[in-house]
Image (tube, rainbow, N blue to C red; front, top):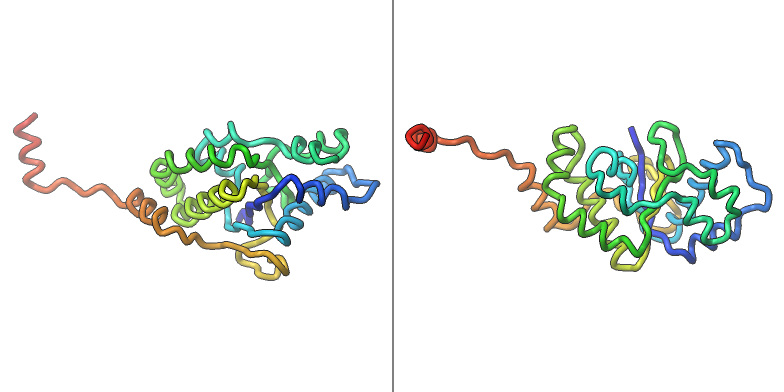
Length: 215
């Protein structure tokens, strides 16, 4: 199980998070994971969260569409730009470790959200088929990823990924404020997904005969 989540963010929210961190930071592996997951929890209190098993930028680029990798950035750049000391920011993991437990990972910058939306739209059918072949919940994942990226693009925000912070099946992990989206609602996207998942019709007897004669 990979209880992942995507969190729209602004540079102002990132700076507000860094500004409230203590002067003395725990630079152990656990402490750095807590720092990054704490940012996701902070974002969840200030805006919508998109959550589902396997819904992460890391998993998408590794399993579904490698083209997304060109648009993602390591968290060191995000946190370094808003005041986290460089020696701390450089130690943060580049992406999620999907088997490590609670942590934050990479991010999609706001200026590239439109490019990501176009990529998802262009490759939807291929991505859906890949997920179906891997026995993933293609309709849900494609829908939520599309809606998360479109939301970020429409509001001039980026997207930050996390695992183990907001768990779609555990409401106790949900923020007191903010909204958690666990199912897609865009009907147009769902219709395209359904068409992509529809098996090709088998040729009838007439088609087979015509094919035999044409050959």
